[in-house]
Image 1: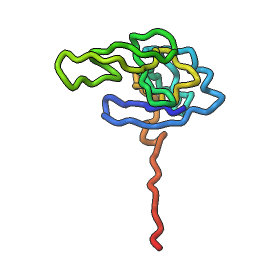
Image 2: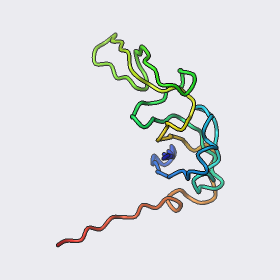
Image 3: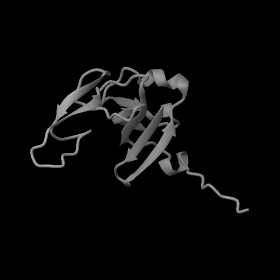
Image 4: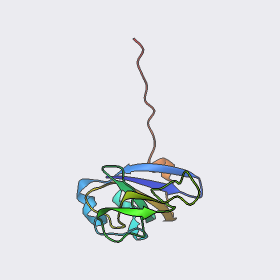
Length: 131
């Protein structure tokens, strides 16, 4: 599982990998629940779960209960972008509960920790060797 942490004050996002032994702590939680940042190595941070997507790329919606995948008639919001005014369409989406099928988890910072996220999640630049 990947955790995308959004820093709304700085306007940046950071990607972290959740270890297999910590995935059980997130399973069963719902969109809007809080988790500790120590799960991914951001000790002292408090994160609010805001959504995610499954292994097929279907987004999670807060207004659908459970962790099931289903087709829902949508007029606006996550998972639907209308091309014409008043358009409605039946789209496949996921519910609001996290399970083992979810591969990307989105979260935002509600309480910052002592160290900055730039220090905790440094991006290493790839260098290509020219032949």
